[in-house]
Length: 452
Image (cartoon, rainbow, N blue to C red; front, side, top):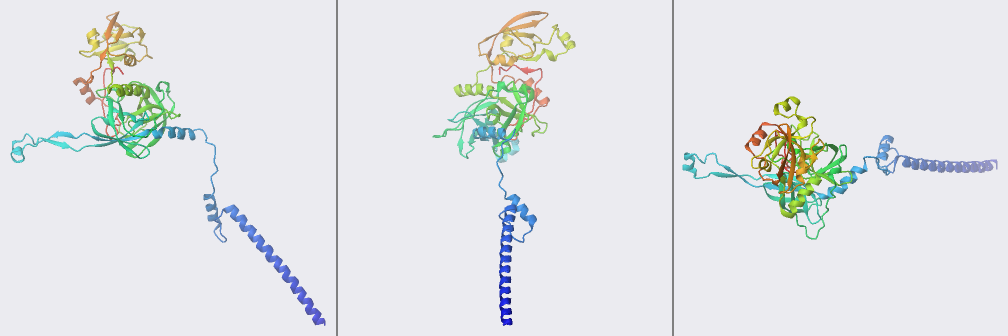
C-alpha cells in the first residue's frame, strides 16, 4: 500500500516533473525564436543561426534600402541642367576628302621609263568625330566650321542611337560656325534652348557637353573663367575668329568641338570650339563661341548659305598698350589711353580707299568714343556692306574726320604672305578640331578688324 501509494506518489511527481520540463522546453523554444527574430531584424533577412556575426552585419548593411534624401546645393542643379541639354547634343562623324599627293618619282625619267606616268597618288581619307547642337525640331544643327570643312561625308548620331546623313547648309571660316541639316521624317527632334551670351559673367557655373575623344556624350563642369577674348589673339590663323570668346575651365577635349556650353538652366550660352594648351591636351583653358554670335551666323547661313560681313581693312593696336617713349617716336601726342592706333592698312580695302594711314589714332567711330569698354570690332559687325562709318582720327597733331564706306569682306582677307610667315614664327594654342588635330599660330600688330 505504501509502496503503491509511494509508487503513485512517485508517478505524480514524475508527472509534475514532465509538466515542468514541457514548460521549460516551450519557454526555451519561444525564447530562441524570439532571439532569432530579433537577430534577423538586426542583421537582416540573410541571417542564419551559427553564422559569423561580423559577416551577417556586413550583409545586413549592404542590403539596407537607401532612404531618399533632399538634394543639397550643387547636387541636383548640375544634373538637371545636363538632363535638359543632353538630348539636344549630337555626335558628328566626318570623312575627309581624299588628298591627291604628287608622286616623288614622277619627274624621274628612269622611273617613268619602267613604271609610266604615275604622277599623283591618292592619300587615304581621314575619319573624324566631333559634336553638334540641334537648334530646330526639323533637323538644323549648329557645329564648327573646322568640323565639316573639306569633308565628303557627314553623319549625325542622335542620343537615341539613330544615324542620319547630313547636308552642310553653310559654313563660315571667320567665325568657325557651320550649320548642317538632317532629314528625320515624322520626328520632332529635341531642339536646345538657346540662351543669351551677353548676360554671361565671370564665375558663372557652366557645363560642357559633347563627344570628347569619340567616347560618347560626356558632361563636364566648370565656370566661366574669362570673357571678351579675341580668338585671333588666342588661336591665330589666317582668319581671326569671333570676338568676346568665352573662356571656361570645364573640360574640353578633341571631339568636343561643336558641342554645347550651357548654363545651370540648361540653356546654350556657347558653342565649344578650342583649347589652349602647350601639349594639345586639356589643361583647364577652353574656349566657346558666344551663342549670340553663333545665332547671327547661323541665321545668315540658313537664309542664304553665306555670311555677309562688312570690314574696314585695318590692323590696329589699343593706344593703352603703347608706352610714352614709343608714342613720341610715332608722333602721337595724346593725353590718356583711349583710342586705337592703326598698325596696318590693307591695300584695296575701304580704309585704304578712304585715305586712312598707318599710325593714325582712331578716337571715335560714328561719334562713339573708343574707350576701353568699347569693342570696335563689334561696332563693325553691326554694319552692312555699303554703310558709312565716320572716323575721328588724330594725325600729325590734329583731329580730322575720315568717312569710310565699309565693304563686303573678301574670303581671303588676312591671307597675305606676311601673315602666313607670322603664323609660322609665332606660337599659339592648339585648336580642338574634333580629329585630334591642332592649329598653331599668332598675329602681330594687334587684332584684325574682321567685321565680326
